[in-house]
Image (cartoon, rainbow, N blue to C red):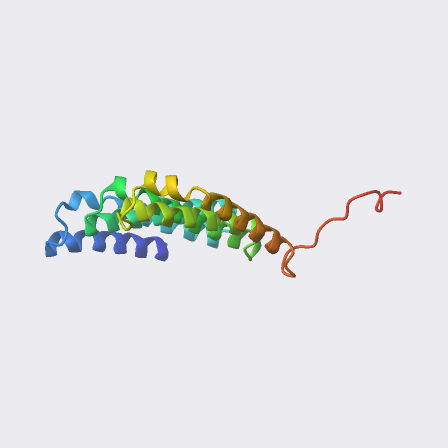
Length: 178
């Protein structure tokens, strides 16, 4: 109950402070703070009650999504502009799920998470106009990079699978049968 009360007070204070200090142009747009609070409570319950790793993923994704929406309100970003950052949040939530499931990040969680994070930052460059090229012009000129990135990702998955920290592989064949 203390944690839930703390989260509720933090969300209420974070919501009301910009209203009274005049920092938010439209205080009604701070509704994503409810997502942040719900995600924090969900994540706390998932970790303290030993829920499934899916609950850790859900709480992390909900909280990070709420933080992105609140940040967009303060920085004046449009929701259509920040969509790639939700891919980054998805990658971070996958990492949290992998850590909660096995205590370490295996290739089955790390590689997709890094792909989502990388794609999110890649698309953010176009969404936030950080590059002089449009996405269409970039793809027209640099489409072979997709082969390089795909090959590097597969090589990374192979290397992580062969690392000394990877779980032991099962033997195939009839050796174990009587």
